[in-house]
Image (cartoon, rainbow, N blue to C red; front, side, top):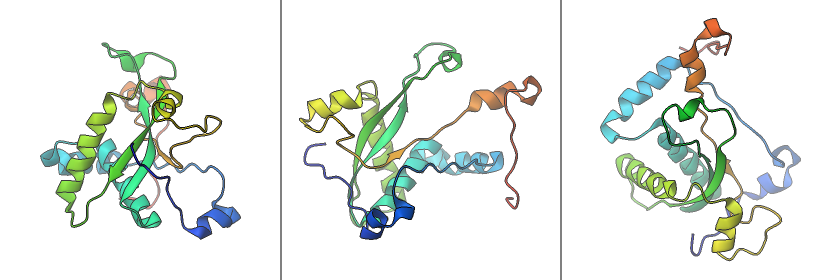
Length: 178
């Protein structure tokens, strides 16, 4: 994170009341799209989460006109043991991720950069944001001192595996989607 800068959002996003405050956007992907994505990603040996994160960062790069970005990434700190995904509780942390997008880049190289960065971040995902801020000598401890936006990829696969007969979930395809 040495030498990082906060994102500079376009002036309109800072001043127009329609764009201020926290907003959440949720998208339920149809199962066939997920299967298609997995098939497409197989040669790249990467995850859907990493591809979605990469797309998010690339979109922010265009929006902010910057190749050097720091965003938060919500990580899952579930116990690393058999059936750890079935333990109830909140095991989340948000860590800053700095991505520098080189010029003259093809998609395969960009995917490699994202995949490599997410592997590096793994070793820091159990360190609290407060502790990371202290480690890089950020003085503003009253608010998030490092990033302005975060990415959270949620995959509740356990609900889909349990099946609707258990009353654990309801899933509807979005109308108009193939």
